[in-house]
Image (cartoon, rainbow over all chains, first blue to last red):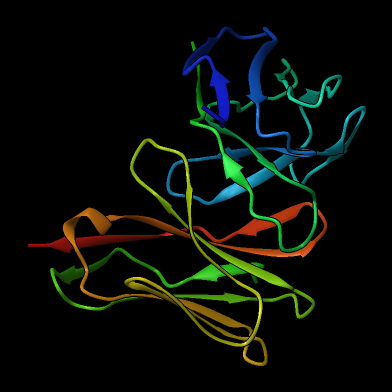
Length: 114
Length: 110
């Protein structure tokens, strides 16, 4: 089956801890994205990558880091500098980063702070 | 002013009625427009995309775009209880970046 997988489904973070959210796609897509969704709100872009070994900050990158060492993988690290990390994190991918390209979403990871 | 703004909800319609969801955007250079549906606790799934002025129909769904008025809408005909979800409007203004509205909650009651 082709698609986007995210793990874990739920993640608990202790204060001062860094945690990493996994995102893998087997769609052969070049572009990948990370969004954050808070209750009752739309999605906000954290980071995106148009090609392997390259990525750009989105609108709310502070407190987050990413890497893109492989085409199929785009992990997101939520660092201790992110003071309000509780949210629903969504990974997406698109064939390219063109303006008319549709972004497809993974199932999401819900991050909670202990 | 928010970059992408959707009509405030929640919106409640009876089964079989037409549901009308509206979205306005502020950036005139916006090129592409998307409607996603999101069920509670799930990730968004694409319903429609539209790039040119006018209407685009797909089954019970019709997207309407008016770039002069910076307005995009989604009509759902013959609404079903299974259409009950949050609908997200998204606008693409530059490569690789989608800006989302806050979403409109739609409830279709039997």
